[in-house]
Image (tube, rainbow, N blue to C red; front, side):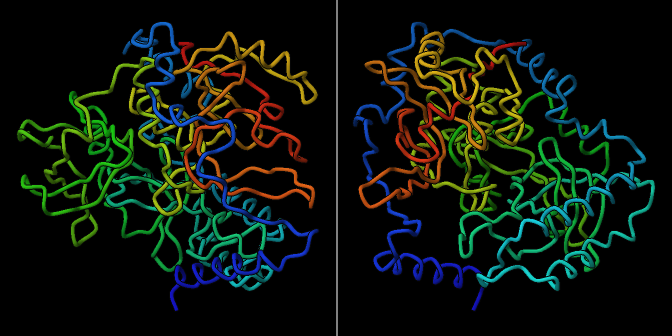
Length: 455
């Protein structure tokens, strides 16, 4: 039985047990399609665009976006330029990072795929696969490209670890996911040669070796410096290897960009696609993407276009760390803003450090103070941060603040005890969601308002 079939059967088993669970156990219920206090018309971008004073105002032009991205990368060190990594690379630091991460995760007491506590044998097997002893003090950098959508893992294994037994949607070993055409620097190879440890603009981690094509620094530099490029503006854009759009290759998520070629067709853009030759080396090919799924260059950074991009992902399934080809809260924001050229960090904690923090709140901050601060915020370039979560602010209706965000669920109090409502998608909600629960509402948990227009 393969891993995914096993996980599906385990999920079915969990759901079948809900009816017989005791009152003191955590219960999971599917949230209503119409989330409380969300009206039908609130589920389109137009409703919120109508509430913005000047929805077509350009918030940052190309020059200011470049300045913003440089500040995020060079001043705050929240992203990185793979072409500026030190060569040779500090192998001692990488070895220490591997060992430290292994120790930290062992101490968490996670559960394995089988629902039992992760064994010492599992961690010993992972340690052998990481081949820590083979990491030299100085590493020569190797360059390449992701050629197919790739899960990026904390360890070189498909095996999962979970904070709660059989909580299959939250694999703690899933770091992120990388799209085709992502440039990477290769730092290490697993003992079985099946995994590569790669560094990218947003994240570092293990990917399957078969998803990487080996190239040169010059290949990456030329790719990134392309004077003309195509940006994915749909939730997902299909990539084809022929003008007839019939030979499917893969898809790319919103915000991914490809060098543009001149051989466009009436319905498709021609792009330069990194692929993997049989010998594992880089082979650049011409590929095609439908014009209604992509844009020639970035979209203008305006409230209208940010909101329209966000609502293209409405109801997209939640995917922790990019699992199943989907997005979590921070990846949702990263995709939306990448389509207008703004490069945000990958994780919510780091995203909250980008831009201008226009308000910060203490844990016991009065709700009235938060509402007053939100009245000054504008939809399109305002994000709301809390511990472990981040949201795109939409505006207020009758004094109630709203956001669109990728979320797994929320808690609600009932006479029988607190229960968890599973949303598991990108959704619109007000910030009172979760009110009265032990964790508190989204508004109570919000600790910062961040504006993404500070160059």
